[in-house]
Image (cartoon, rainbow, N blue to C red; front, side, top):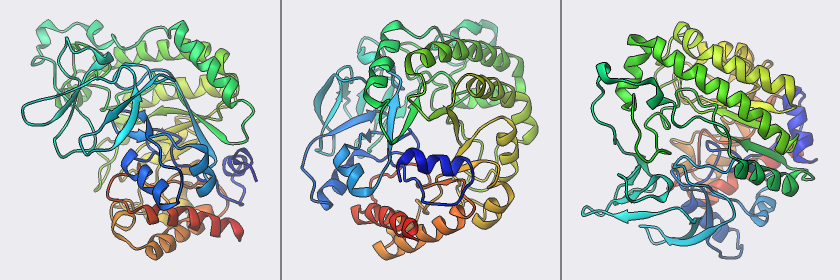
Length: 418
């Protein structure tokens, strides 16, 4: 059965073989370290990993490893990255601080500071302060604080609108090229087009801007939800208008090439519970999600995809009402997120995309058999009645043994065999 056929079963909530996604979205990916290790474990040709998402150092899965593991998703992303510079076909070699040779976008520019930390720059422009920092022993880039202390008396709304604007023609041309590559594929093509992430705290600091201004401090942003909501509403209104105008142009370029569109990665949950009340969600976020989801559903066949980690049981009905088709992931390792209960409560109204393994304990620390058993159990719980796509709880990160990634794929194969 093709990936598209499996996705159709999932979205129609019909029980059957499960789609396996690794690497399709920014929150369903695999770090380049683990990806290289899995390739070696499977005896595949040794080659440098191409970096698809530079901040998290997520790699692109080539056809050979997708075939070996049974993965039937592929990424079809917009040209821009979280750091502004494009991620297209122009790659160069880069040796990571841990000694791995990878391929990075041509405008991926780094320096090393006196502490041994690796600094990275928006648009590769070293004339400005670094937008990201990878600690000397780290494997990801963290946003840096580059804005002066917030001064409410000197605030200009325009400073928080700088990253939103018309999509460039060269970026539309890139999407049209992607269309020619993926349109005939039987895999599920995953679109991450950008511009629809309302209040995503990974983007609030402006890592894509050379010199961000405005409300960029994370604490100040969260304070603003309560103290100056009218400002955030103005930002979100402007962002939503730009997003819909751009989606119209991007749909013209892509057509129905993609099946799933990544809308937003804003998290509303912690390990212990939601840090956003239903009222705050409904007042501050839902109206804008509804605008985006309604436009997509009225004008395309795309399914909309919302990432939200944490303990969010009481928020799931609001996400459904906001128009999302897919929720990624189900973090059943958080409090009040029992797998069977969450499946029973909402599993017939939204597709659960992820939740196939405990990524905090079992995946990095368990044996192959423990990972296989837990993943198979998740398949049986979430796969009942359809509405489930297999993925982990967030990305696969360094420290996960390669055989445990294979165990995930083997568990899905076992479930699909009946």
